[in-house]
Length: 233
Image 1 (cartoon, rainbow, N blue to C red):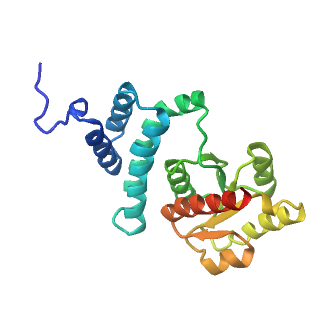
Image 2 (image 1 turned 180 degrees about the vertical axis):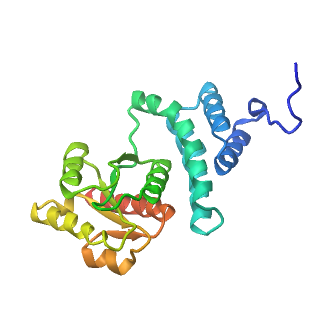
């Protein structure tokens, strides 16, 4: 029987605080198997799924998001971290559903008509899920009818639109104008993003916010939904 490598860490030998801190590091390094194991251990030790999500996974992804925003991490590393997060979420999602735990909010996100780029959108979707949102990704080349149908079906708090081409950017205004015509613009927080966009463009088309990267999208979505609910309460 081969011996374990000397540097192989025994997660079960860690106390709860050490394990949570190690899971933050494992998320940062994109170690999906270790995240799944750490999630199982915390659940075995009596942690509720919401606590595991908040303290181990969401907090870990928050750290990843900060370093992505600050240029310490780049897209490949964040995709690995998000994939590791998914390994934990696969275990937690059915348990969270059983307990009736509510996500921060729901987001419908898609790349606009004429644009088939999806890496940025996928990254935003992963970061939003990592921040505690339920995310419905409706894909690429999304026309206004598909956006409206998704909004009708899923009743999200937030609509996210992505574009990577200057030629497809104006389609975001088509979607927003259609919502206005239907008298439904105020039902949703609208976030837009993509390489050719800027804050002035977001303001010009009537979006609630322009997000320059996935980390900012998660931060902005969390802030805006809390502000909206504080006003409503």
